[in-house]
Length: 346
Image 1 (cartoon, rainbow, N blue to C red):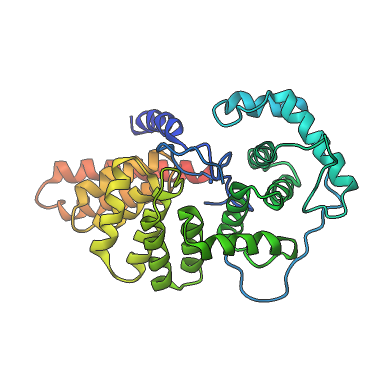
Image 2: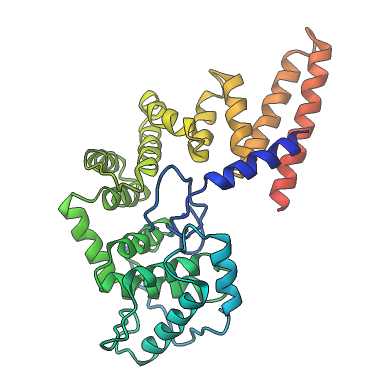
């Protein structure tokens, strides 16, 4: 029965997922076409995918990139599954643009900042979409690098969404300031942060500071992002989530809960996970509800494990006073454990 409920919940969750935040480099925590699990469709439409210790920067090799693994059928499949995300062109037109881009890149003096001859330009929005395409196809060797090349080229042409998408992927993959070819993109991003008017850029900078362990500056940056709130603030919910995480690490539990509560109302799975952990001892019933909701959405296999642990704790606590209830709790402990193992295997 629990498994059937999870199936229904997963279906609902997929309908709530955002078509953005192409998720991270390697795939991790999505921008627009992405993935990375990217988060949830709460009215967000803007499309954007770690913090690296100082050291010798990497230089990515692109001479082996090929389009052989990307067929027209591939593009048709991605467009048909994501019609609201990839709506500017038909699948064939997207593929034709990708072919043109690869040819321009082959002849380009700067393969990370591809330019076009007069009359042959590809709109930056389409370049951005193509980068998002690659985030949907990360199992193909080179797809991650293709997305970076496409977004870097659109960023070079002044498209802010590509700058944000690429930097967010770098931050969340611990590769920020780690790749030589990304220096210009990162410089553009820092100019956006310095301007203080783009809440999405401020949010990503807050995440970067958080991952460096600079929690107080991260909180201040998230607060700046919220003050710069605008109608196209795509990462507003992620801003609240990460501000809550920062409060947690600082021991400011009540403030963290205030960040998580509105996100839980929208079904934001990462907030459900965090709040469930907080409420496990003080409000176990609500904690169970949140754990179950998060587990069914695939938010964390740990949630089924926690449910099993809580059921076992309840069984032990009532084994002398309520033998029937204790037996039922043990049965649930076994069921939750089975689901945890099943999810882990997949």
